[in-house]
Structures are given as structure tokens and as C-alpha cells.
Length: 231
Image (cartoon, rainbow, N blue to C red; front, side):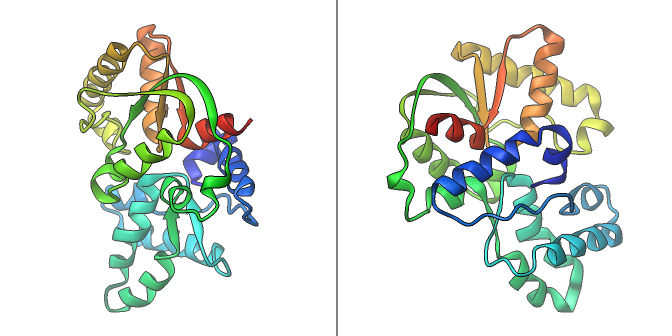
């Protein structure tokens, strides 16, 4: 479970676990260790390596580590290994075990056995790391299409960032807020009252902005949506 999810909304980790168990997997939850992304993005590479090493150690013994966060997965797959220089290839053998939640579920051999059904409309926010670095968009849309009676509404400016960007929202709060407001205006045009995304980080940012703006909006991670569809 990503550290920010454990701190902000641990129930989403439970939703992910529930879906994986319904797929027949034997699940062990690794809670607490950070992937190192906040430190890495702020230029603290040594600290990011130290934090990332703790996560790699905590996940030893697991053939596959499913991560319900595109940003964390991207960090682990693409950036963390670079912090070890000549030992990069060795670290890559560990980091390659980390798989983003939606990609894992979409490719699961028992996915077709899941009775997925949920009536209603949701807007879909395509998180930047999932879209640009992990190329998850089509697999996520295909996964959503499996849910019977669900009306998935795509955004007009789907490729635009929500403005969170981790430490960016702290360093550039005015720009971050303006980007969130633009994204929420796009969501409002869909007339959906639920926003779904693969990244809780985006949803936390957009949800907080929506509350401040007086916009009625529920935010569900993909894991929560799938878990609800299985109920």
C-alpha cells in the first residue's frame, strides 16, 4: 500500500486487496515504506535511495508486488534503479516485480470470472504517470468497459494534468490550484457526480479543491470502483 494511501485513505488499500482476493490471489499487504518519489522529485537523491531501499527490502519474498498507484509504480520501474549507478541492473530485477494495480487486474487470467456490475455514471480522470509513463489508458478503459451498466464519461481534456504533481502543489500552489479548477470544470461538463482514477494522489487534490469550490463530487479509486462492482 502506498505510504500516502495508508495516511490519507487506507480503505482504498482494502478495496485493492478485496479485488485481488476475489481473483483468487493469496495477498499479503506491505504497508508503510515509501517508494522515494517525494525526495527524488525534490532533488534529494541520496534520501530517495535510502527510502527506496527500505521498500525493496520489505517486498522481498514476493514474486509480484501490486501497487494501487501509477506514480509510485513509475518511480519504482523507471527512476529508482537509476540511483544505484553501476548496480542499476541488479536493482531493476527487484523493481520489475512491481506492477500497477489496473495493469495487473486487466491482464489477470481469471478476470473473466469476475461478475462486474454497477449502475450509474462516472467521469474518468487519466492520471499523468499512468497515461504518459506506464501507457495504461487503453487497458483501464477496457477494464471499465467490463463493468455492466456503468456509464463511463471521458473528459474533453483527458490528457491535461490535474495540477497535483506531488511537491509541485506545495512549490507552485497558485498554478496547481488553477489546474485543478480547470480539471474540475471539465468534470462538471460530464454531469457525473463520481470521479474515478487510478491514482488517489490526483483524487485527493481534486477532491479537496472540489470541496473548497462547493462542487459536489465523490472520488473513487479504480480499486474502490471494482470492489463496489463486485458487491
